[in-house]
Amino acid sequence: MRFPNRAGGVAAAMLFLLLGTFNPTPSLALQIDLPKSATPLAASAIPEAPVDQITPASPAADAASTEAPRIPQLRAIDPPQRSLAETVEAYAAGTAADGEQECLANAVYFEAKGEPLRGQLAVAQVILNRTRSGRFPSSVCGVVRQRGQFSFVHRGHLPSVPRGSAAWRKAVAVARMAREGAEPVAARALFFHARSVSTGWHAVRVAQIGNHIFYR
Image (cartoon, rainbow, N blue to C red):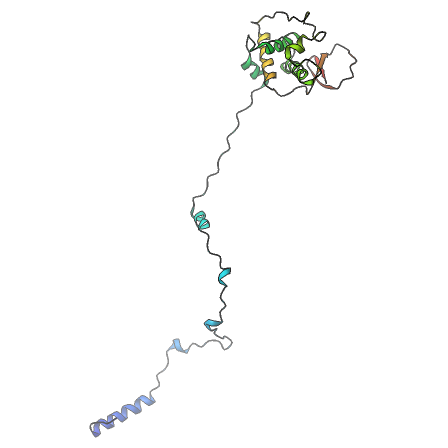
């Protein structure tokens, strides 16, 4: 480097000396040292998770997390079941729907009109059980009119009934219920008799309802 004159050279020399001896104090931020035991890791030393082990977020899960909370559905409450007396009252009628119901209602009326409703239903079910047993006629009227089975039947003929009476209307209702599959009250019974009668039967006793005992 060339200087234009002596004064300029002296000034330049003094400036060079000053810069060489200048030692500014470092800032506090630069004076903070790491612990000697800490060893910085190089970026290449940090292990990376394999690509095939990274599970992407499920769109369905994201959608589910943002959905509004579900309101629980209330189960419909089943309507209460009608009692036997209520069903008989609803089914009561002065006229049977057909000949089979007529024969069944006659048997209920003459054999059990003074019995509780369960006892009347049991009598009707005995007759229906006989139609399915293979040991008796296959029709209701055939079972009712069978010789020597029911004392109210005279030579295969059924007596007349007071069709306007409450007892007859109940008998029609009970006959309808039995034919429509009412719950059995004397399971698989095929025979019955009054408690005052001693028969000596060797059949299986299944129930006693009112004044009747039922067997199979």
